[in-house]
Image (cartoon, rainbow, N blue to C red; front, side, top):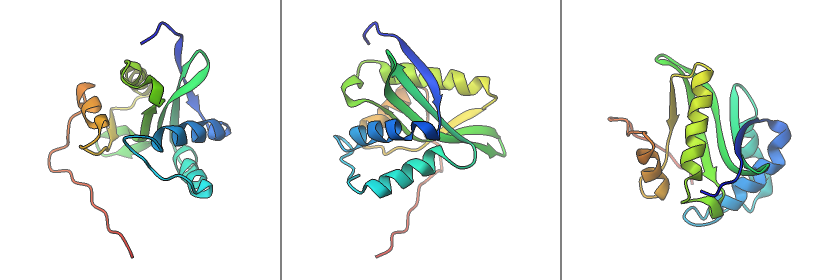
Length: 152
């Protein structure tokens, strides 16, 4: 990681254009290759993540430029309050250089200070993010599965 000034900032609906641009730039590339060509669908997804009840969106800034996103919400669970992360990403050019680990460390400290007991997220076990999360102290929930039902 270069010796640049890194900081985190809580993001809000006013930051949607910047959030959307970074998100699209990251997730339309390897290993994701998501098709976000439908701008309306992308905008609605961004609104799902950063608007509504208890959103918690955090940005990582390098020299005042947004390079990372943690998009989620505060959830009230029987074991305490949790930060449910839907999307966590670092600008593609910065990946593999410690930025993600540092960002996750800062996000963890931030949410702990707000009384959050744990962070919950999901990822695919076939992508590099899986090993990243394991390396950074996350563990798989035994007996937990994700299910989907698709319609034709």
